[in-house]
Length: 323
Image (cartoon, rainbow, N blue to C red; front, top):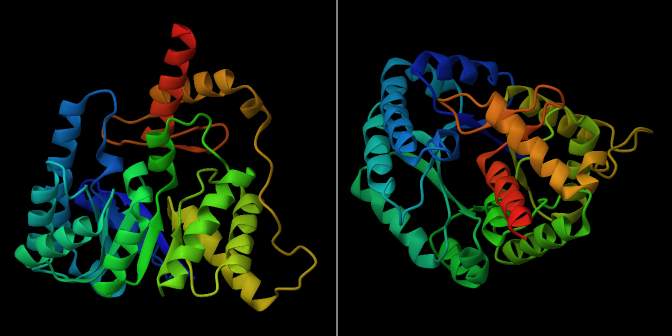
């Protein structure tokens, strides 16, 4: 199993510390220039955050080459069709003069042309990297799966990611489907079958309940039952990464243990009331998020609150209020 840990691109010393914390696992650290540097309350601040993040990436690569030498490190970049693409690629080119990147994760890929444009941009900026990993995470991308899959296969790309949270936001859903909901797995398993048919590996979206060991165990067990080739999963911090690494090794060593991995835990009781859940998400996100990060963490539950979840909850409350 492949683990990719998304890590917010912060000032170099802070990022270096976070990378070292994950050094005990075989995970690939994916430094994030996209969602973790997204201020959903002020888009002008988003631009400043991303400019600072690019500068920090270049400085980190130049001052901490030992991190890149002993740990697999990649970067998630913004969509190729947006204004951040060119400066992101330019920063990757500068950073990779010092260190080769393990992977470049391309967001919001919606066509085969987007794959080719990402590859062309990486060549143009002389980025040294081992693999491109596209994320399919919008309605347009899902509508063009055949085109994306064909282009990925033709380009020798080995993995595709299912971007569940962006897709849910783009689709206007609230609450977002959870692993305990049948539609969640219907979509995921359809992608697994489609991509594996063309020889591509599937990478699963993150599980935002960072303290729910049983739920994560259930997700890994279901992926192991469904996938016919090596699969991957995204994680959202060193602790969750260590949890996933331990669970995967435990399953390999003792698959028939009495407390074997089972189905994910049921959704929390408050989720039965969409409005109450939305209010909780909005209030918690605004109260706990840092000004230099796009994500927040619920201090009581330990749940990770992404900008996508916040925006969907906020928009749901507005729709209910206007009704």
